[in-house]
Length: 415
Image 1: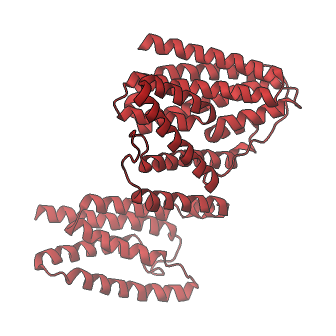
Image 2: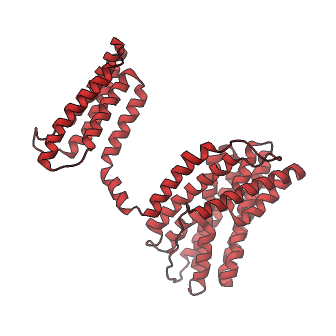
Image 3: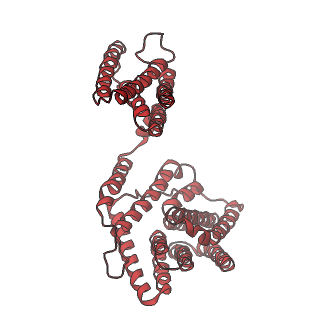
């Protein structure tokens, strides 16, 4: 009996929580002019709980559905009269009331924790109307398509892929390849939104920092090209160094998500490198010197061609890595990851992290991850030298060398 009372109290609380939001939104309406406010929603949740309790006591599967149907028809009739008077076509209040009734029944006759979570989520969603509507107004078709593609990639493609290796060397797992492709594209999409929202309007530095979440290599190339026609090459090199710092933090986040235990091995050296990039880069940025701004954009990370290229590159890398490890041991993984890191640090790091769950020692995996990050950093310098002035690439090379050396020393000391 005490459990039933507590569950009915939860059902009432769910209704009151939703009714609080509904009542606040219509708080200026005259009394009695609205179908449902805080009291009605509270009673609706309690009624759902009572129907759930009666269904359990009477052991009749028809009790709750019949009660739900009667409640729905009654509520809809009154809401229809209100809608005709106000010329209102919104069905939100009706759906919210039906969900409150159902959650009340779930709280008593089902899972109270799930009911409480559902009630909180419902209230939060209703309270976020302005935010959600504003977001929809700013959302472009490209971004909507990206979200839909993410849903398809995750909910449709991923479950049907075999989750086991299919090659003789035990390296190529289709499910893992696609999972890491989705993960990397999702992280890049965050950066894409950041660049679109803030990057091109808040100045070069913010653009570089946000753009580095998507691709620090692309940011470095844009900065190097700008240095050819911009007198502030020192400032630009500092911005590129700060982008390198963001790239390191992005990789650390990837490691934390995929293989958290590797942070103890990779974290100290990566942190020292990030601090070096940040400190030396900030010194150049704050150095008294002029320089005009440049916009740094980012391509949508859910374009089909780049995604398939990433998946193919990752699949080829893990397969080659498995072959080399079979024939040459841990040194094969280090060589493969270092070389692939020049092209794409995400592919390289994910390849190394895959070894964290296999027989490869964690120290070898950590060395491979750090080697990939170092190779990518020096790769950015090499690319910058091909499109930018010597002053830009020389400063960036000096900062990169200092950061890599400090990271290497830290790794040696902490192992």
